[in-house]
Image 1 (cartoon, one colour):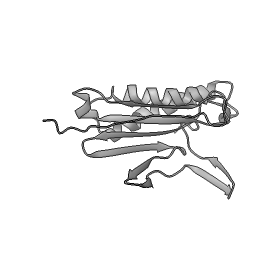
Image 2 (cartoon, helix red, strand yellow):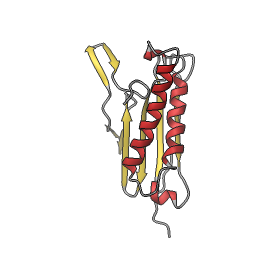
Image 3 (tube, rainbow, N blue to C red):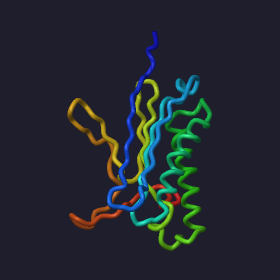
Length: 169
């Protein structure tokens, strides 16, 4: 009789008002021994609307996260593994922006919000940058687990203060 974690996941994304869907999301449930040592990883990214290339940032962030997270040493903690992977991905996106045509206008470059969760043992590890929120459903109630990284100038005016590819760190 198995007592391991079992999940059911569904995924959907909508482009909204934009002509191109700049979202990317995925889930990875590895086989043993990685399931035991690394757990199940889910990630989603949302490209910023001011950029025509941010869907590339979204796909790169999610696909790179899932591939690289499971390539980290099994001896590393979830936190160490994710922090190093996200730092490397962010550094790559930032370098592409600094060396590319959008170096003077980062809002048009490879920038996206990013949220991930790693389910390992009895713990949900949440990692987040930007304003793509993570919620917990408890019965019929939603509990917001992340804080938006936005700076509010007025009740109806704000800007994103943190995102993948936006800053060097």
